[in-house]
Image (tube, rainbow, N blue to C red):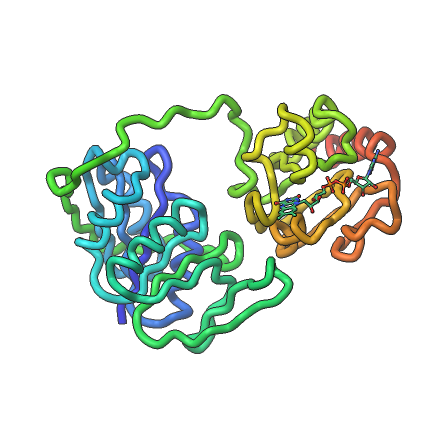
Length: 309
Ligand SMILES: Cc1cc2nc3c(=O)[nH]c(=O)nc-3n(C[C@H](O)[C@H](O)[C@H](O)COP(=O)(O)OP(=O)(O)OC[C@H]3O[C@@H](n4cnc5c(N)ncnc54)[C@H](O)[C@@H]3O)c2cc1C
């Protein structure tokens, strides 16, 4: 059986999560092939170095410089051998995965967090429960970030280069970079998020200062996003925002409503700072501080600065 990993690429490099997908594919058993769709073949070399990979197929063409759903799905489908298709459970990965499943008339399982004995496990009911399904036949599997350990380097897979430019009907020519250079919550390993309890959007600068010390992303609750237009929806964590899975999630002035928990409850460690001891977030936090953020954040920042100096 083949497991075909569709690597995510950004600015010509493969996403580090590709090594996590290799571990996930290893749990399914069978050979592992990586398909890298990129402007040129430079990122294929990085994929070939991941241990356990048998072969890399580099899809080369101008149209692969930026993600375009229909052209990528058609090109990737045409070069990928039969087998399971594994992608990251990012917005693009889920989009592409669903299209590939439809093209091949195979099942799609999104947001997988564990694979064992041919069974895949994924969260349901906004993360309140996990469901395990048995795979019968090939499937598209999207894997949530930070749930599988990355496979080590040291591999020497063969690379085959396929030029697909001529077969693609439409392509995105340019993607404008967003103004903020700050790390996106969906990709961050540490997140500090603010809620309505921050009182004003200006106070998010306090979170940004701590994020700078920790190398973290700054997130927000929906109440913060809805209340203040300065806080963009791209920062929102939760059921109608982004699902995140960092090692550390610090919730500041966030009550812990079920819809917020849906997006962050699988974080490895949750720290809550809230002035209300009855706030629901404390039921899910590994560490809780009952105090106002005005009291806590300055001390937290200076302690972290001296710890990490
Ligand atoms: C269909 C649907 C989808 C939704 N999707 C999402 C979603 O994706 N993400 C999301 O977050 N929400 C979502 N919500 C909204 C959700 O139900 C909550 O309303 C929201 O999460 C509350 O945000 P909050 O905790 O920031 O605000 P609040 O509930 O107002 O809580 C503010 C908290 O701050 C604390 N606080 C106040 N002042 C201070 C201070 N000085 N220092 C420390 N703590 C302080 C308070 O004690 C309180 O616990 C959704 C709701 C619905 C119906």
